[in-house]
Image (cartoon, rainbow, N blue to C red; front, top):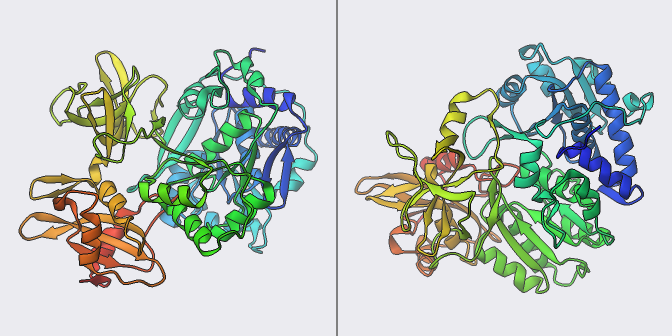
Length: 542
């Protein structure tokens, strides 16, 4: 059979080349590449016995665990499609994603059996439930679920599956900052080159040109990498895939929340070399833990911290550099729809969230209602965009697909959603989501830029910025912040610090101090909830 740019094909090549190397660590769970390969084969055979075929969708409704990645690989081996399910979803959201994804089987922690039971009647086509044991004591028989380990026992670990394709799908459901989740449909080849580095992240020769080359890119000296987000979040899921295809060891956070002390203890124990975070929401507790316990952990193994998927402010990067002076920091831009859009080059003239180089497949495109899309001229604003290796659209959503994927000069482009400016030097400055942009007296203000400035304040732990009504200017900049050690900064002190970093018209005119800034489990901002807190007025300070 031919080998393709298919994640299952390439993983098998890697597993064959380093079978005894440690692949996965999650708490007490440890698997070599051979063990991961064999267990994925067994699970794939079980799913096939239950009628799961090429193109069928299988839910992964799990906390971080080795079974998550076993489930992913098992699906890919069958040419089926794993569906990431956010374990924080309430009944309405859960019902939506199960129905919208046309799910046929679901692998879940035992704890979630009652949640599935509450929406089971909404998804009559969902016929197979496989539960991973935990200490919850919930009744899996409520949905006739079968136990994961027992189901693998009688199955073959043979690799006897049909030929796969470059175009098999990897669907990533993303909630963004608002609305119901959307299933981004990535062909395997596209996601491999756009989001997984194309096999070239750890090799001087760059991306591979044939799938068989992936085995030659496996390092003789593997590194140990820790993904801190839940695997249900795209950045963590993709990070794990990148490391496995490079023959590296993936360490997962086994806890259901991010506690800085716990993370650094794992880093020390497993001698982690690199960690991946999702912006400031994850950076903040890690930094605070190091500040509170100087010298507590031996972190000499660490040489890299990378962030993607959310704003990673310069103030947080500076704090890491002070605490861990020998590490390299990488701040990448990207999304579930775009993959990796490049790393921050430092910004242009101090503007925006960062700056990347324009290229053949990276541009800024206009998105003006009633006008055809076009590439902007230098100095002009538009929407950050990508072509080449991109998704084919959103699953079961042709309307959003048509709005996000557009044709310009005969080429298909993805509109990422962030407003951006093409600079005179042919670089691109990114400002943030246009949908969150605040119009105050005719001035456009991007919340992410203001949030970065506020985080320089020594008493602010986390923050979000929203627009609230203003009698004179229509809208005003309003900050929702959480503080360190129960501090109560005044609005004046927050404004004073912000003025050092952004123009006066961008500084907050209203301040709300809350116990915790609302965010999704991935660290992404929950702007609707932040606005609700601001409009309530119950946390307002002067």
